[in-house]
Amino acid sequence: MTTAIERLRKEVVGSDGKLKPLRVMAASGQLGYGIPDPAFNAGLARKPHLIGADMGSIDPGPYYLGAGKMAQSDTMVRVDLAKCINGARKLGIPLLIGTAGSAGAAPHLAATLDMVREIARRDGLHFRLASISADMPREVVKKAIRAKKVVPLGEIAALTEADVDNATYIVGQMGIEAFQRALNAGADVIIAGRACDSAVFAAVPALLGYPLGPTLHMSKIIECCSLCCTPGGRDTIIGTLEGDSFTVDSMNPTRHASPSSVAAHSLYEQADPYAVREPEGTLHTKEARYEVVDEHRTRVSGSRWEPADQFTVKIEGAMRVGERAILLAGSADPRVIANAKSITAGVEKTVRELTPPNPAKPYQIIWRVYGIDAVFPWTTPPDPLPREIFFMCEVIADTAEEARAVATVTKQYLLHHGFPGRLSTAGNLAFPFTPPEVAAATAYRFNVYHVMDVESLEPLFPLHIEEV
Image 1 (spheres, helix red, strand yellow):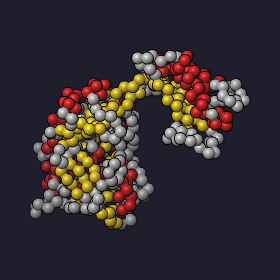
Image 2: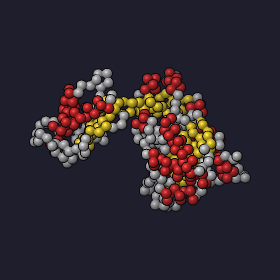
Image 3: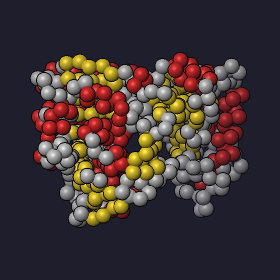
């Protein structure tokens, strides 16, 4: 039986060995939030050679990785998965999906695979399904720590073996190598755990022999779909590789890929605007050129790929901090607004006296006063002061009941707290709904956000093939 990658090779490699233009379709910037039909169908009409979609990120925060839950609703994930699977099977082309289920750990991958099998049964589809795990063996990570082969990313502390034990899940970001193994094994549909966004779109062209510089650069730009356009959006997009260059073409005719918008998106999520590091090497974009094709499309050339001397894997993990409750209240009293910092400090002091923290596992009270310092910890209040503010008090405790108890006591004393210049003994707050204290999800924090040197990538990302 001819595999998907073999069919593509016959189609795009000419009799003279030269590569024909390769059309790579990015269906969704993050699968599970809806794929607009007009642009998606327009993309299918262009007869792409593969469809790719990223499904996750650490952007939504540590909860989804720590809890093993999806950020998207099951309903929307099923809709988007079905659209992509049916579209790819109709054209007989590979479908590659990375960071399954939002965070790419074992429960996320399993839940996504269950949906894929369910869609296949419902729609009468038959194909070879590959799944790639991204969960890092804890002993491998600990061994790397002992060998001083793990370094932090950003401001996080050096990784310890205790951090490894405390993380509920630890995943590593796979690159193109894992996807290429799945393609060589005959996969039609690939569902991967945590993966580099660009690997989803670069694996097929790299396997076919397209130059890695433009391939990785194109993949980085199109992975967010039409976000690289003016005006930006999430509509389906097609990148077309043509020798040492590529073009970017949104399937929504109202979104235009201009040289400035495409160049700007090349900087997206990068500490270094000219060097994009992947497990297998580094993409250099400093010499890239962005040229107008027409009012809707841009051509990019000049990107360069440098293979790595040392393979690396970015590893991510999240640990439970406690159970969370939040208190929500607003005020339009100018005296409350002027005294917000002293009021919250005074209320917290009273609450800690009335509900003493357990010394072994003390609770946290975190204040965010919207209008003053909730988004950024400004050193001075605004001048003039806002006419309204919103208090959000977050309580994290060892148990849900303790968190609720602290939040309810905080509510009562915030409502009646005395402060200089107060005119009313009550009514200084407005609650948007009742109860104003709300039980929220378990609190997690990232405790693994590091880069690990590895000798080989293949053993870390095991592949499973099945017929569905």
